[in-house]
Image (cartoon, rainbow, N blue to C red; front, side, top):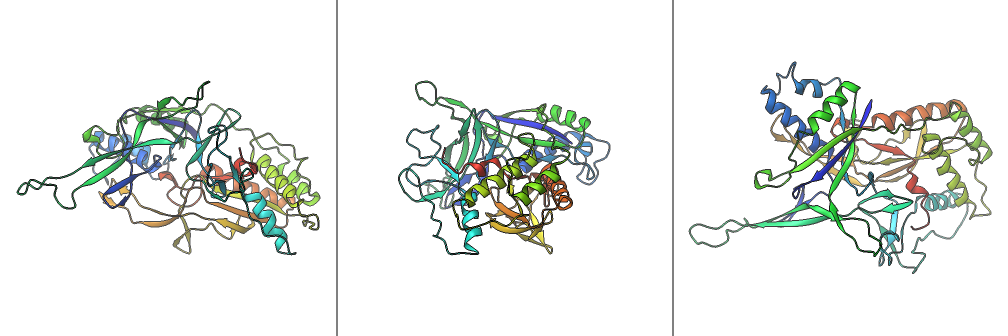
Length: 430
């Protein structure tokens, strides 16, 4: 599998219709993978001229054949690197929201998962004070965070694309006044967004960029995708009115991810039984390192309850949804990942249910709306008997989930997950 880094730069406002409220059609703040995939498919289908069921020995069949389709991930707004959706457990001050480094008056954004999980574990066996998170600066109520975050130097940045609106109306030819129910307003992503502040704390405008990934099955397909994506010049709706003109670039990801140590399962199993994850030796960023760091922080949170002794032999991990996930439970769509995953038991779920649909270019019809697990959802699992064999099987399943995704319609941008997101370690606001 070859990973391509995709950058979509807006040259004109981009219309990404979401839901309609009255006469206003709201816009998505990111580019779904299915939309980029559909734009490329329309381009190739128009050039080859075949009907949907007769593609053979053409560019369309080479890219979209059923046995080797690339995965088109969503593209999120970003200033410098790649951004990710905030997890459902991220919280901020109700009155002074945002990252401190981005806004001097902000009280920071942090993740409440680990202290909440520690409280719930202790409360199962003893009476403790109810966990009520509040802003450490002003004691105000905390509220969930929406949108996206990205690493910016040594801190975080919250990219916020600007929105612009275009209003239109139809005139009744007989009465020469605005026709009833034909006044509408379209919300769009602007081609400019606020960039990082300069030395004088001014925020200049920078081009709006949406960045994401495409996973090709081999080098040959990756090379073809690189050349073909540059030919996609328009995305979204109302392109005949001058909207949606974009510049797309795709480059292979040259930075190779560090490999897990060969004795990763043995190290994690011993750490779980000794309740000491600080000694796990694994390169930073690897799955082993992330799992060890998450469990180490959880043990530190449990130390705030001196009368509680955590049982040995347990290993916790999270499954963080970086995109919407379509998962079926006995054939029916559900908003939850399974109770058993990678040999572990689900102990906590922070699910953000989402309804997903779309337009099928092959049939010319809307896809059936179905329930999905929304991006940002977080699921916590616990492996109760962390033997080296059980941990080895767990790591294999988790590595496959990160590499190939989970659930259905992964080629359309669904099912992108990460195990033990580093953002969960941000217990203190930043």
